[in-house]
Length: 123
Image (cartoon, rainbow, N blue to C red; front, side, top):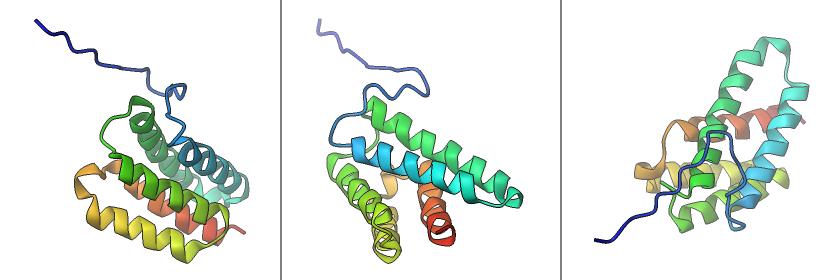
């Protein structure tokens, strides 16, 4: 009988994010922290919800589940566009992922979309 090893990591653990996905985690986390520091207090509920949704994405990256390698590649490109302040490109990639990778998108996609908008609004 063949046994199957399933890697389950604790929620919030980021120690197993593969190097190919590391830019997604580091850049989006950095941008989220920047937005949190600059967003008006009235936007705290949206900021907190966005962070919660991004953590869902990071859990998927850490567990290497749900997301296919090409989707991770698209998210790396989106993250780099965000870091370079190319908000139009980041939005285009977000829409491409949302349209072409429906089965892989979940609650985390709302967080990515919202973060792009928040980054654009908080120079």
